[in-house]
Length: 355
Image 1 (cartoon, rainbow, N blue to C red):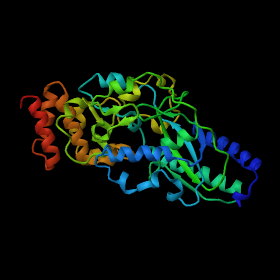
Image 2 (cartoon, rainbow, N blue to C red):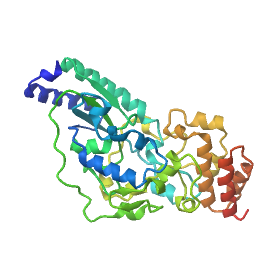
Image 3 (cartoon, one colour):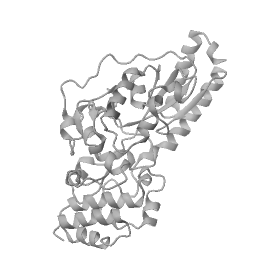
Image 4 (spheres, rainbow, N blue to C red):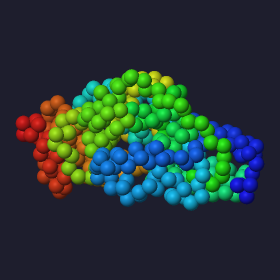
């Protein structure tokens, strides 16, 4: 069995795993132990403060998120991988400076990463199992209560920065993470000794809604990514004007981070923008009926919020846009929407335009 392998055999397997990960298209692989007590205490403090908002599942999972062996019994190591997603020429700053255009978080412009990464992780796990002669392997990509950034930090892949993102000194933060939980006692990588944000607070200062209560502390209830993706109800009217033209997620804290000058452009064709969503007109997107929405977002992470919340988010952005005939006509076309949620946000937006 895999647990009976000698330390030298385990080290050889670890090196082979890194080679296979590169062949499968991952930019980095690290191996972590499961000592997450510090992160567990931080998570509990965050939950106690209510910063998770309506994400009740964060509480329901209890300590399972910070105790991998409770999620998958027998786990003693977690293999973490990094996959860069930033596509070339998506002009994020240009779109943010154009209030009549829709800003979509750059990770969501192409195909949904979940299936792509999970398929590759499953292939990697199968190779490891064959080489090790057994063992247990479970792959995860945002599909279970996993502290992916904490585990990647433990695996020496970077540090959790003041904006709570994982920063890699050679790749910034524009990347996805995935994990394989295993009972194979591979040699664990050494975490970095310190964080390297220094005195920089650019990410905290740039946040449009002031969602950071301090370094390393994010109040999700004010975060635009939470408001546009996770939150299912009405958006706080006080926050709506601050959201600008951001209709799905927010990248401001990453755009401000000086470490992202080292970010690598992705080689994945699947992550290239589709349907012109890297800079589409707000009014044009607001007129999509549900059939068009489902067609244009097929295979996209945007699909998860559904047409109703898509319209809610766009209505807020249209309320923040300059008053033009295209903007007001689009809003008036949905003034009597069948959705109470959409009607509420459309009415707010029309009042912003004096209608």
